[in-house]
Length: 246
Image 1 (tube, one colour):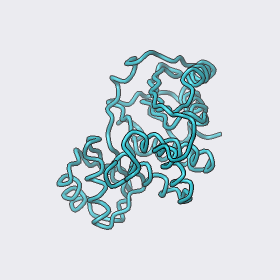
Image 2: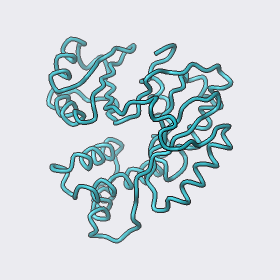
Image 3: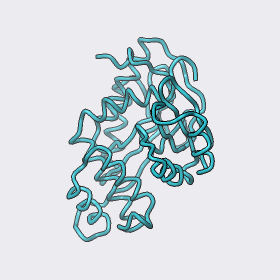
């Protein structure tokens, strides 16, 4: 990846997202609800639910919030029905953007997200318009001070990971989605705490943009991320911290 790494881009985005804790809790609650609805309320048998709960715990989401979301998903508590959607589109400079959405009103989300794309200098595309530019992967960012590269390589590859790369003071581990839980479990058993562990749309190739275009892309990503229905946003633009500066 030219210039700036995927993990650095994620770190910039994650820092902004974590600052809005109440909004993050709301988004995580939705994720837990739909996971519980799809596979039941037991995280030992519902891996998607376990992943959602782990994400919630990682940001200190209260236990009551988690349990209430599970009960809404299983039908023990009433609440609006949520559905998962994926929106694809183009940002300034023609960069590719994918949004994972959880909504109780498809028409509302469609219209509002489309407007955000248009106001941000982009356009929403149809299904498959940019998805081919990404691979859905498990991505783990591990601080390098927790382990050696050789030891981590042996551990994650045995658990089913595909690749490990060093980026400065961090390691980036990637896996197929099907191996995500096995890799996460192996890290836990080894006492290694990832800085982040996510299932992401990883660009097959990064698109370089100049600073001005990059700032426009960053503003679009922030605007999308601010929308209540948007869970996660992925982009193939090679963005630097300077481009996210206010």
